[in-house]
Amino acid sequence: MNAKQNKLPILNNWISVIKDIVSIFLNEFKIVFKDRGVVIIFIVASLVYPMLYCGLYKNETLVNVPIAAVDYSRGKYSEELLRHLDASPDVKVIKFSTFDEAKKAFDDRKVHGLFFIPTDFNKKLNNNEQATVSVYCDMSSFLYYRSLTLASSYSVLDMGNKIQVDRLNAQGITGQEATIASNPIPFESSILFNEGMGFASFLMPAILMLIIHQTLFFGIGMLAGTSREENRFHELVSTKLQRGGTLRVVIGKAACYMLMYLVFSFYILEVTPHVFGLPHIGNAIDILKFMIPFLMATIFFSMTVSAFLPSREIGMIIFLFFSLILLFLSGISWPQSNINGFWKAFAWIFPATHGIQGYIKINSMGADIHHVTYENVSLWIQSALYFVTTTVVYYWKIKRSQEKSEKEVETSIL
Image (tube, rainbow, N blue to C red):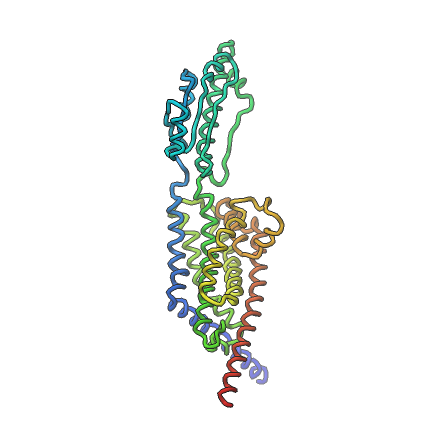
């Protein structure tokens, strides 16, 4: 009988804890949907941004980039080379009579590159000498540069191989023997994970993860700023929630954000890639296993940082400032191996760094959860670390608010 009596208070205590957490959880949902700004960030931005960005890069690659071609040689070989170049899907050849005319078209942005064949081109080839061509690329965009460089390189290599075969045939070396002699080491490129070399396939997986990270961060920051503005003591946690205790407040709020973003993450990471045909070869269960620590780390990181944001506007500034920095630090636009130690350490602070790397490996490269152990473990460490910092900060804020409330009561009595 005594054992049963001892268990009842413990059971009642747990029931009370669960009720408090559910109450805070539901209250946070109400706060989120009452705040128009937070609704725009949490819901509208999460729904619209993926479609907007993917729509902008839907074409994936540049085709038929206009380039100027100047042929001063005007012979058989030069005309054949220009036909090869124009047949490439990357560029569209526009012929000009003089170099000055082509240069003017380039300066006027009517063309994005210049292919120049000198006067002695055909003469040198007929004399079995080495001929040269000049290629001028528009470096204001790497995509223009890529299109012209690939098209001109492949055209020149193909033309050179054909000329070599013709010369061997003239010497009496024909058939398979001539083919092998002209190309003793066959070259074959195999493009992994992005066969079409599409810009969206390369960039958008990273952008999608960054959207989740940044909308969570900004939304939680806005909620914290609103709480301060509406609280009579200008503190982070309302006096209505303080009776629940620090852990209950932290868990209740985090559970609210977690539930919402599990739904949003499914839409962003599963639906969007299918709609726009982005790389999506990862196992859905592995992505889910990876997203749980990523969302937890991002939520607790955002809750910790938001405790020090005095207003909603400060969160907006930080949100805009860090978006591009996080994209660079993730190692997508620049290899992490070439980032110095300080910036690597700085990048470790943000869940987005590990989240982007891990998601790309699973989603675009077909890795399983065991292949992203470093990123997965790092996110679990961040989850635990930021959970502790959030709890400490919220405890401090709740205690301050309680002290101010007690002082106000004492002042009113006096």
